Structure formats: C-alpha cells, structure tokens
Image (cartoon, rainbow, N blue to C red; front, side):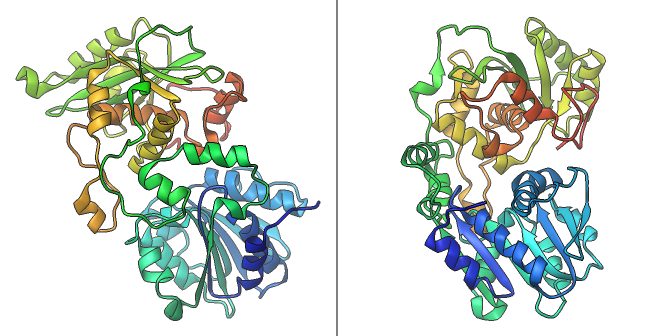
Length: 428
C-alpha cells in the first residue's frame, strides 16, 4: 500500500528517538498517521518487552488506533472486547484510562513501549504511573494530543521541560496532512470558534475565557415546522433545590438541521417556592413526553431516585454521558455549524446558551470549567447530544450517513444492538 506523507510526518518519524515523543496540534493534521507508524516500527524492531496502547476508553482506542494500526500491518483486527494480543513476539495490552481509578490497571506492569491516544485527556496520576512502568532500558512513550490550556500538566511539567524528561514535541497544523483537500480544510475551520478554534485548528495551548458558545447567533433559533424526524431523543438534568430541565430533540441525519430541540420542560423550585417530589416530577415528565415517541431519555447519572420513578413508568431511561468538556465541545461544534437549532419556545435553554461562560478562576488553576450558575437547561441539552453522538467529533451527523448507520454508530459498537431501556449505567 502506498501512502502520501508530508515533510513534517517524515521528520517526526525519524526524530522520535526520545523517551517521550509527543505529536500535538490541530485535528486531522496527520499526527496519528506518523505516530502509529513509529510505534509499529518500535514494537517490531525495538528493545524486548511488553507494549501498551492507552486511551480514554477501550472503544476510543479501538476506533482511533487499533483498527488503523492493524490495517496498516495487514493483520486481522482484534475484537473490540480484546484486552491483549501477541504481536511480533511481545504482549500488546489495550487499556482505557477514563479516570484516576485506572491507575490500578497498570500497577505492576513492566513496559518497553507505550502509545497514548488523546494524551491530554488522561488523568495525571495515570500518566505518572505509566512513566514509572516504562522501566525497560531504552523504553519509549509515543503520544498524540490536541492542545488544552497552557497550564495543563503535560504542557507545564513535560513539554516545557524537555531537558528534564528527554522529550521531543512535534507541532502539527492542518497543512501538515497531505491528504486533506482545500474544501475540507475550509469546512473544518468553519466548525470551530473561540478557544476550540485556537486549540483544534491553530494548535495553540489556549486559555479559555469569555462566552463558551461564541458561535451562537439568531440562525440557531427556529420557529417554522420541519418534516417529521427519523427519531426523537430527550435529555434530563435533575434538581431538587435546583431546577429540573428536560428537552426533546428531533434527529434527522439526512436533513439540515440534523438536531432540533423542539420542546422544553423547566421547573425551578426557587421560583415557585417549593420543591416537587420525585413522583411529582416523574408524572409531569411523562406527560411532557407522552405525545413524542422518544427512543432514549438520557438522564443525569446521579439522579438515582428520579430514574427509578421514570423507569417504573416504562420510559427508556439511559444514564447520560456526562463528561462536561466533551459535551461542551460537541454542543459548540454543532451550534457553530448550525447543525443544532432550538425552537424559540425553549426560552430557558436559549437564555442559558447565550450566558454560558468559562470560569476564569478555574482557568488560572489549569482547568476548563464553566461557571456553575443558570446552567441546568444547557446540561440537559449537553446530556442528549453527548450521549446520542458518543463518538464525538468523529461521529458527527452529516448528509452521507443513513439513520441505520447512525443507530449502529451510536449504540452497537459494543454488541448491545439497538437501545435497551434497561441498559443503565456504565455503557460509555
């Protein structure tokens, strides 16, 4: 198979001879292509010892790295459920690191090579443990990432201190990927604004500030009726002393706008001077949803008591994917691209989208967090978008995907088939 490579890709392949080798920069800039080939070279010809591929979760590793790697090798791809394979005489492990609890999964390991996908999403304690596990003489780590804030631990403690850590960094832009055409580059640049544009297009370690959804404008609001969608989903953020918000989204994969927020439920106990019981909320939510055939109701995972009431009413409750930054990225991209539109009657969501802002104090600590006030409608919308399109930016809705492909993409990559209302937590 013949590949077209850029000068930057070839140079990074040749110069990735340090203990830490990090490809960082814009999305779709060719980082993964060259880093995977270097990793293949090392596990084939490098020092003896075990190797490991690490990512945010097992599914993302399989999608982003393993399939490409084994296709390049011409080998059968391991099962999405496999945690280890034997390759070139060495054990190659696959490990997901969604949070600090994953540290225990690699304690006791002795590694010659490690490949880290989406490195800036890996918890710092896990990274530190991984560093200690690379104890074979000549061991190397290869990693790819998009930039985060300038105070992120990988930037501050490693990239900015190359002499201490024997590290080399390769900075990539869209122009370093020779297979992208001009039209695609233009389209992907237009899909980001603000801090996400600086990070994912310019490749900068940028500090978040100001409005989060700065791509919002009047084109994101609609009033006229659209044809019936392919299916409906809903998101729910639960509050007792705080508001409870629920939104119904119409999904039309082959028709713009693909995601339309049609209806809003919003109960603010402070406004009415009393809280509602879980039973009262569940009854009102059932009434709110009863005329819409929703496929899934994505609920705040912490809302255990309300979820029980809703399930007893035979509603298709599924724990929402509630990673805040992931959901914000997804919403921001769809808002900017006008793939997400909100009916003018959803006044709380419209107001909160426009006022949603980065927390400057958190930014000073190196964290990307929104200001936690008047955000319950946004959380409801974020839940349904991040859960429905759980493959993130690689799984965006466009005119080239059928509804059946979308359903498989959303729910079937781990063999569960289409939505099972009893699936509960842990799915993502």
